[in-house]
Length: 129
Image (cartoon, rainbow, N blue to C red; front, side, top):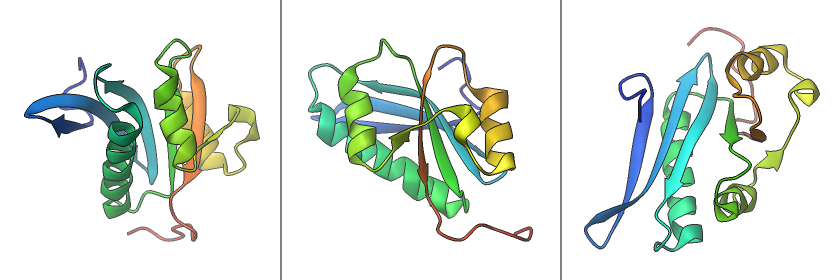
């Protein structure tokens, strides 16, 4: 949480305690998720899905076209499973077709992370909002 104030943090609560956190930034119609933590004692799938849904809703409010998730390959595999169940797909930077999206990922993808993506809007924003 070193970047608090630079990006959005959403928390999931269960039983009066924080059981999960997701951190993301929406910039130039692209959502970038770089932190996801779920308490080991929490129901991973349910908490993961709640965090993903909340992040996608907030991203939609900001007209984001796509979400990219950067996961540490050593992170809890249930976090990746939650994203895959929500429609995300593993992708390589060079396979991203839209130049602005590819550039955004190339600029911000931490080394040695797994890249997941999901298109959030069918139609691209062609003129400034």
